[in-house]
Length: 345
Ligand SMILES: [Zn+2]
Ligand SMILES: [Zn+2]
Image 1 (cartoon, protein in one colour):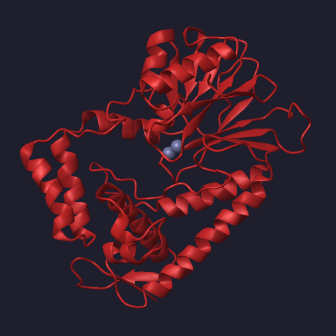
Image 2 (cartoon, helix red, strand yellow):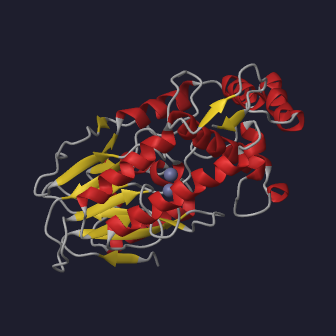
Image 3 (spheres, protein in one colour):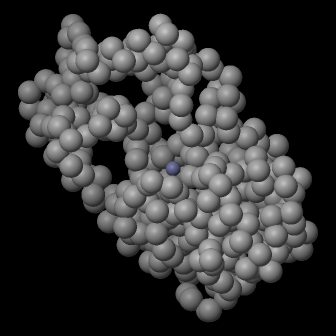
């Protein structure tokens, strides 16, 4: 049986499993409206996850076929994976922030060879050793298809406009743009009194932005079609302050469990990132490429045990930290270095 929690006031959460993933499950939220049930995120595209979603909706007294709309916090496959199937079964609309909708369009349109070429060039520029870049070049030359989940994500039909109240009769749900984890991540703020009378400003569906016990991955917004020098970590830290100021009575995240005192969790995360950035400056006493920095950073296991794909993600995270340090004037690129190295200033 799917684990379903009734949070009161016409809000439920459904545990939808993510197969073979330490996160375990996505908390899909169900929101009752005067026009029928609406989902916040849908879960991983897998038969077991689909069954859990369907059974969970039945346990809430509704069904997939009755869903009228899907609000997506961000485009990742553990959130947006089942959206196409939900739309197919119900005719529901799918809404997403434009910046993530753009990622979805490009994911669908870009041929695999373009992606491999982009990643190979990017990793070489970050100082990745040849044995890490070679498989990507081989994949590009062989025209190998990409075998990853979430490569055929559903195109949304509606745009979530930041700051707007969403068109949900009988409810006050406002979109808060919280870029960082993805460029178009949104939190959804239910501006209604807490059903159990908890003090604070309504309830916040926080997606992956604000989680009780883990920090979301913040890497570069990898995009072959966009050369803008973005600062995702800076975006994320600003977005954290924004949701801290909202001071919701309760946070309903997309993983782990609900929690209160969002401002305290925000402070904890801001302190954690400040400590991490300061730690990196110590490492950058000598010039390092992003790859060398990633090798020296602290991860959940030693670098030698981190597999290929996760190393690519780790380097992206190292680069996001370097961007932030450069933007803050605390590090700079060493002139003439190739691949480029960075040093603390
Ligand atoms: Zn995510
Ligand atoms: Zn997630």
